[in-house]
Length: 206
Image 1 (tube, rainbow, N blue to C red):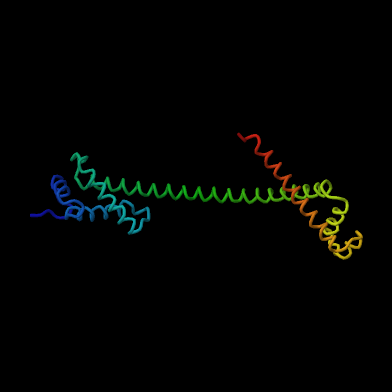
Image 2: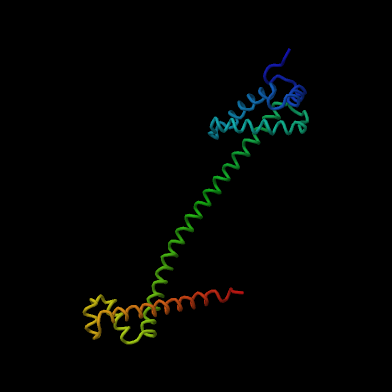
C-alpha cells in the first residue's frame, strides 16, 4: 500500500525523489509539506503567497541537489524542512540586504546631489566673478579708448544714436566699434580662461 503524504520512510523518499525528479509524485507531496511548513515558520515575517511559492520551489531544487548529503539521523521530512527554512531565510536576508544597499545608495545619491547642487551654485557664482573680472580687465587692456567708450555706453544702456553723437561718429562707425570690441573681448576672455584651466591641470599632467 502506498504511503500517505509525509508518511514515506526515509529510504522511500530518497528512492522516489531520485527516480521521479522534480516532476514526480514524491516531489509534489514534498512541495506541499514544505510550503505548509514554511508558512508556519515564516508566519511572523509577513511573506506573501508568491514569496512562499518562490521559496518552496527554490527549496525543492536545493533538496533534490542535496539528497546525497542526507545521513538519516532524522526523518527525511525534518531534514528537508531544515533545508527549506535555510533557503527561505537566506532569500529574505539577501532581499533585506539588497533593500538596505538600495536605500544607502539612494541616500548617497541624494546626498551627493545636494552637495553637488550646493557646489554648482558656489561654482557658478565663482565663475561669474571670474568672468566679470576678466571682462573688466579685457576692457582696460585690450580696447582702444573709443572702443571702451562704446562698450561702456552700451553696457549702461545708452541709445545708439546718443552714443554715436557723444563719440562724434556715425551709427555705422559705432556698429564697427562694437563689432571689433566684442571680438577682442571674446578672445581676451577665452585666453584668460584657457590659461586658468591649463594652470589647474598642470600639477597632475604628464
